Length: 315
Image (cartoon, rainbow, N blue to C red; front, side):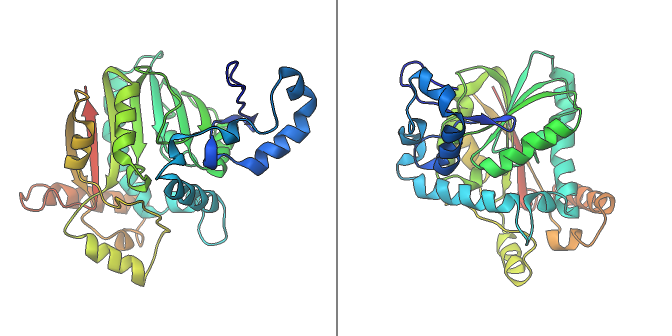
């Protein structure tokens, strides 16, 4: 894929488009792509090093943070300690994901039409995307990690889904999407990885259509956070690489979306340590988490202190 004006080009391989520029571009992979297809590319008046040298939104202050996240998730896609798919499959996250996604999907089933589009920002290896794939939607998932996106595209090819999906490698600070073109944006546990989550929220507002909905989940700014961090130090159960805002409240999200005409509603979840839930089956963990959520969110001074905050922002 290339631009007729600036002659930047972007490789399409293994079922996905690599749309990164500047310091985030995978130069070695693009060199290999060029060498393998030089006979096809040179007649198009394309040069050897185009898109990798174009300035990107991440090329300023957030470049180091973006590269750190890219390297982390490339490693997490496949390693000997714990792959991201292993992390996704732990009893805790299987249960916590159900708590978030089941109400969202119920709402989408009432609202959706086959011509609607959902954008999954920071899709990783499809962890969030594939929760939506039994819906009659058009889905675009993107992530900064080429290795994660490669896995997402492979998983999509190997199974049959109701949704129609495409995957690409792109930067969460500047979506490669036109203004007001998507009906839903899903950002699941991603903002706390970013150098400028407020800028990403502005991008969400830019690409959503009128009456569009942003579905999100993040690490909550809770009084129990210190206890969780201590448990993770003593007995780490996953590999976290958070950005400068490791916890995010619903008020912060509402502030970032201010001016975009959004109404933000939020609930918190997970009042039981993830380490405890991981000793259980997914079904038992789901029942325990759901039951404790109902009890704790009924207590005024506790309801906002679950470990995760789940929110919807509607125009």
